[in-house]
Image 1 (cartoon, rainbow, N blue to C red):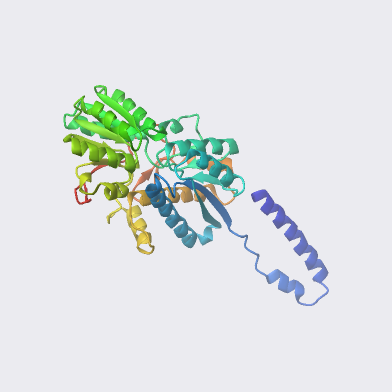
Image 2 (cartoon, rainbow, N blue to C red):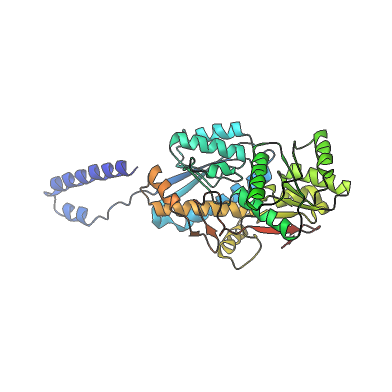
Length: 392
C-alpha cells in the first residue's frame, strides 16, 4: 500500500511540475498552482474479518460479542478521522460450524482482502481461523474461547485479549480448595471446546497439586446419554462440578442436577454466557458460580466500562459481558493499528501486537503475548441469584 501511494505521489508531483512549466506563459496561473493546498491522501481502510455464530448453538454469545465489536469500530471511525485510518468490520455468520468458519476465513482474506482475522468464536472455529491466517501470512486477533494450544510458540500469529482457559481453571479450583472442596468432577460439551476445558482443568489440578478429579463426563447437548453420564458422576459424590459447556448443555445439566437433589457447588467457565443461561434456567440458575474475564458491564468507575456503557446508551443494544469483551477486543485491535502506523505491513503489525504486553485499555490491562499464564490478569468469580442478579 505505501509503495503504491508513494509511486502515485511521485507521478503526480512530476505532472504538477510539468504543468507548472507549461503554465508559466499564462499570467497568474503559476502563482495559483503554487498557492493550491496539497491534496490529502485518502484514509487507509483497515479491514477486520470476523467469522462469528450469528445463528446456531452459540448465537447469543456471537451476536453480543459481534455487536460490542461493531460499537467500538463505529466509535473509532467517528473520533479518529485525523489518524488517516478507518476500520471496517466484516462479519460473516458461521453458525458455530468450524467448516463454515474455515470457508469464511478464506473468503475474508481472499475476496474481501481483510488485513487480519478478528474475533472468531469457538474453539474449533478459532483453530480453523488460526490455520488459514498462518497460511496467508496474517494474524488471528482476539479469538473467543480458543484452546490454550493456540498460545504456544508455534502460533506466533495468534493474539489473545482474554486470559487462557488454564487461568480460568486455576481461579475456579483455587476457590474450591479455599472452601475445603477436594472432590471435584467435570461435565463438558463433547466437542473441541469441552475437551480444551477438560485439558485446562487437568493442567490446573496438576499445577495446584490437588487431588485428581473424581469423575469426568463429556456429553452431547441433549439426549439420554446425559442422564447416564450424570448418574456416573453423582455416584462419586463430588463436592463441586465444573461445567465446560455452552448455555444449552449447561442449562440441561443444571436442571437435571437440581432435579436429582444435588446440593454441591456448580461452577462454569466464562464461555457459558450469563444472559442465555438465565433465559433458559430461570430461578434454577441460583447459586451457579461463573468465572468472568472482563469487568462487570454494570455502571462503575472503570473507564472502559464507562466508555462501553456510553456507546450502548446511544444504540439499540443491551450491555453484556460478551458485548463488553467484543468492545475491548476491537479497541485493542484499533490501538495495535494506531501504533503500527498508517503504512503498516502484515509483518510490522504482528511485531507491534507482540510488543503490546501491558496495554491499559481503560482501567483494564491487556497482554497480547502472555503465553499460557498471566498472573497479573484479573479473573472474577461471580454468583448468580435466583432472580438473575449478579452477586460477587
